[in-house]
Length: 90
Image 1: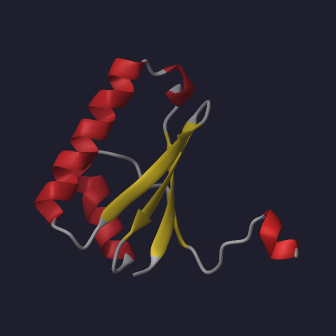
Image 2: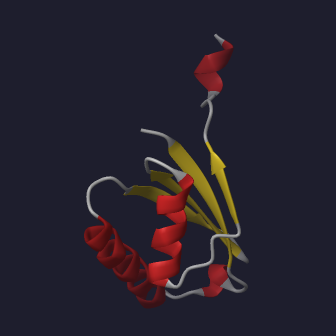
């Protein structure tokens, strides 16, 4: 199944408290449960003003539906075509 990186513009994201991040996570998981097993949240990176999320989904439209139902921004969605890491150099 394709993987996608979602860039979410969220000013002040890096200042969210643990409780606030838990609430965002709970909302996301609730929507994922409603959408079914075809979409999976792998993990997210929180930066000062953005959240970058990695998801598995059959298509971009399902990612957009998750964002719509959850009330999350999905400013840019990019399909992952390859993964490289330090061992790729060997």
